[in-house]
Image (tube, rainbow, N blue to C red; front, side, top):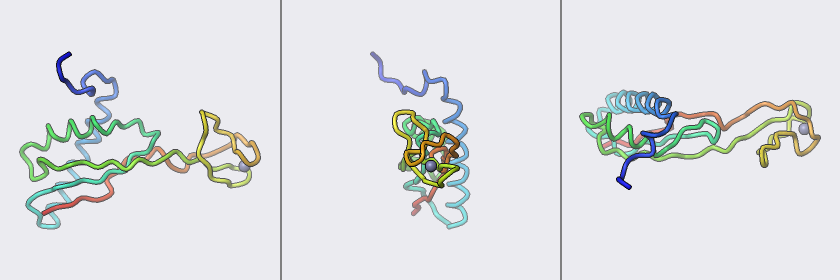
Length: 126
Ligand SMILES: [Zn+2]
């Protein structure tokens, strides 16, 4: 089988592509403000439920950053687990096996506290 990126066969590739574009633009903006000549590393936070595939983001990043000072930068992904909060007892918990009811009082009215986020946390420049 020829070597190719899994992104190209993924339906969600456009999702990663638009995220990658905003990450690159933001990184270039920050690097410009810092007077940097090169972006070496970009730290991203990706929630478990955001559906973002890190490999795809790196793949697109390599392609679209080619003629910028962020070319060759390595992307690091910090996964964030899904966290839910119970509306009745305010207990914050992680869901188990798609069971989203509160382990304390079995309430099913819950809100998502984290896990959907996807953002750039910091960059390292030279
Ligand atoms: Zn509860």
